[in-house]
Image (cartoon, rainbow, N blue to C red; front, side, top):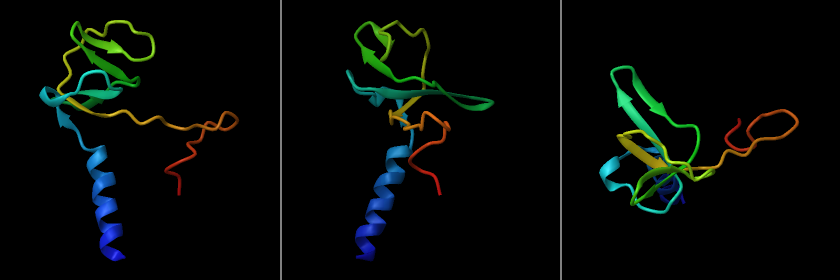
Length: 90
């Protein structure tokens, strides 16, 4: 039982890690980031890689950036009345 929990924790942590932009898949909602001398800067909206470049997954508008890293986009569930996340709170 402990091993199952440990593997799940590793899997969850791996989902949060950044991947090199060269490995970004086409047609999926991704969180993009640029790493520079000041650190990581992640976009606040999901993007999709297309043959024409990067697009905002919500609006379809072209996004003129040169991301360095990506990870899976995870929707943040927010309560309308308080604005607090439903998941990930202690």
